Image 1 (tube, rainbow, N blue to C red):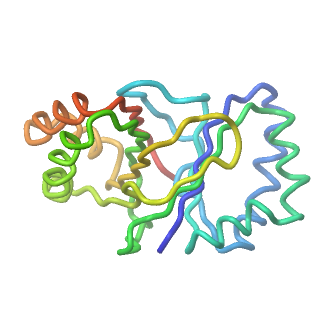
Image 2: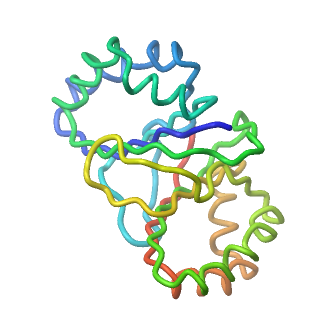
Length: 198
């Protein structure tokens, strides 16, 4: 199954950071990764999200993502990012169906902090039908996740892909989703971002 390396960064030195932007794609490609989000405009629609720039890299497996992170060739490139940003980086496994992300240009990113599991399960049982009817595709939905850098507390990571950013808003603001959104907000402390992809 695919895995997603997610980075939320506050860029302090844009000139130095441009060097990182230039150097990192070759090492991402070496480990069979590709960006699905790389600095697109976004809106935090619930809770909070660290940083002012978001990147998400899709890898074919969790192991490939970890090999990217630990590659000695990546260390000096990561050092450029460390000098120019404050970063929170985490890794989450994708869903087993391995959806094709090539046509997805809008994404919903979520970190859900569970507070009432029984109530949340009612949401989790019903939301996939609404998500699919409104043309969303789950890329990650509560699988294994870990913090690679930073102190951002993770619980349940969700990534949803859509045709474009407007489609994400169509889902999020729909009458069909409204009662489920109410259940989720009662059951959890949610941090949700709607963002454009590459």
